Amino acid sequence: MTISLKTTITALSALLLCTMTVSAQTDANPIIADLDGNGRISRTEAETMMNSPSLKSELFNASAEQQGRFYNALENSIRVRLLKLSRAYNTPRWSMAVELCERNGLSAIDAERIALAMRANASLSSSNSKTKSANDGVPIIADLDSNGRISRAEAENMMNSPSLKSELFNASVEDQGRFYNALENNIRVRLLKLARAYGTPRWTLAIEMCERNGLSAEDAERIAIAMQKK
Image (cartoon, rainbow, N blue to C red; front, top):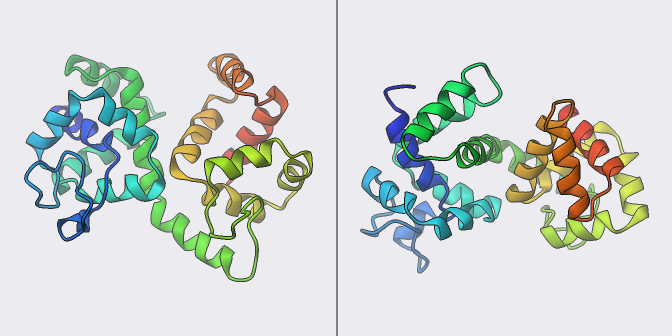
């Protein structure tokens, strides 16, 4: 991992880049940072993208589909290094990984966001599969348009509806899992981060941020516990 961190950083920025699709070579919508339009994100293109805060922000706010498309466009060597970074997250190796990232110009915050995004992307196919089966005759809680995904608007609507919240918090582990797997990727990443803060010194800060965004401490705790179980 030490040898590959620089490439990781390079790729990291690339991952931060929420873009269109690998198959975009033939699509009308180009892949962000794919400067030569060949449908792949090279090391050079990733390094160029690393210097663009707007592109990094775009990735973090991207949908699961957009992040998955970008992830698939990364050169394999870059993708492998990003996976190594994500596997170091929440382990004794994480401190060393962050130090190496910071030496190469990547902040600890961005490194954490990338690690979480990589974990979410790694489970995307599995989540999609669960979503499909969940959609076969069995509705997903709060999925108002029945498209098998929970958008930000639907998630906010659910949190403002006492009946839907009660339905979710009292649902079976299976139904809760189907709900969380159906969440848009950027929402699921935030919930994963919330779950990992639970029971640690970061929890107080996490609660403060939740309350500033209209989520009660009680609901935040219920969500964190449910996320840890799934």
